[in-house]
View 1 (spheres, helix red, strand yellow):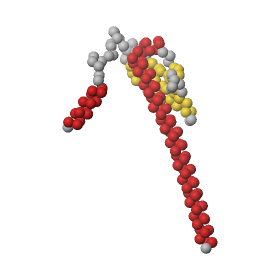
View 2 (cartoon, one colour):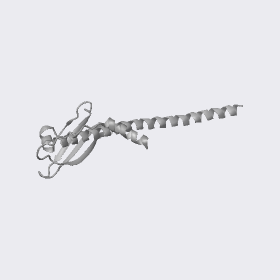
View 3 (tube, one colour):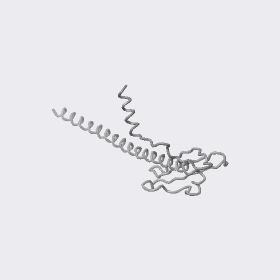
View 4 (cartoon, rainbow, N blue to C red):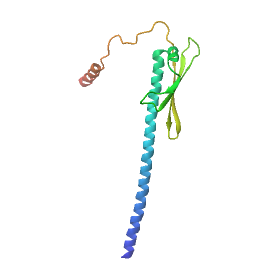
Length: 152
């Protein structure tokens, strides 16, 4: 009878050790997953901020943007964890400007950054109004598409 009890006790000890190892692996994987998710969110935010910088250069024009805005600094709240730098490389008056927007942030492994680059043409002549000729009714378009799908 004592042999069976000893065998049952060994079975419980081995099972508890396997369960402990499994739980340790699951907890480790979940913490790594959470850290990667946070880093992914920061990369997405950095991409949005870089896109916003380049959009401002496009709207204002590279020549005016350089005169009015600083080339580097800290992003406005709630994004003050991020810093930006924008480089506008001029290759001539008639050529587009090479624009590079870089967003940086501090992370666990050190400083990380994300860059977007594009070419932006200068604005010549009179400013062109950027208002659509007629207003866009997105809700009406949405319901029209649904009605078209249902009628098929």
